[in-house]
Length: 366
Image 1 (cartoon, one colour):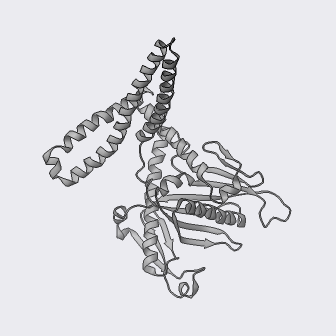
Image 2 (cartoon, rainbow, N blue to C red):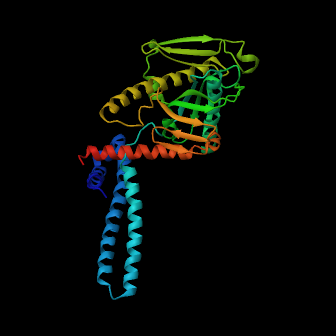
Image 3 (tube, rainbow, N blue to C red):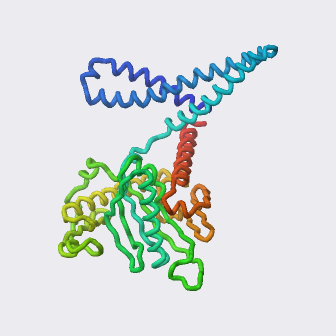
């Protein structure tokens, strides 16, 4: 294990002792708010410290086994026992080191949140809109596999099918943490259904994934900064949807950010959903600005989720998906388009973890 990791873990062991002392004090026990804060920290620190203690114990076992093996040259049974212990300790140490590295990585507080996903057609006309519909289907299938719920918030259908723009809300465990790397430009190479001569065309869509803020964040928006417009909804929805001004568009005047919702059955529900989307977009704007500052200090292929970046190519003639940020290429495109995104998501999460670990090492002055 690298020295800087040992230094970090030693601090956890020291902090555990401090927390146990604080939690034993009567004044802390009487202050329920402070007690709960310290208790939560104690749970997290204890999990790391316990594994670190186990790691050091198995390190000692490994050293003892090597000493035993060196002194058991003439004792085959003893040498075999020492070798078995060396293999067992080495395997457990590798597993513990991997776990400890993950536990030391900084946690994004938004990872556990629900998310809004926006898919917009870009260059490519009707084919781009059709591809937007394919992306929506891919993501909703992936959500089904994960047991997440999806709900269309707003949509603008194209004439030949697909979408000029569609916004969905995704609810479940760790939604944003899994999907946040999908933000960016998605390029497709294939023969469009409108192509009569069999030529391959290139089209593009943009995807944006926004963490759904909690209610406390939503309250911080000044109502005086909002302009709320109502209008008659269009598209599917039966007789009711076209007879009342139930669709809602909300504009945040200071930033010019706009959100709208027309799929609900009432103006009240549409306003509530539009406000959530608006808040998420404002939150994402702040996040992007912070990420841009961080990127200026240390380059990262993943981070800001800049929507102008081309992050991925879907090549249908070759059955190939390529994620350009991490040089990942998979020849299972048809499965991926059916929602089998696990390999892609896990590779991106692993890359982020490696980047974070490198940043920790740099911060430790190694």
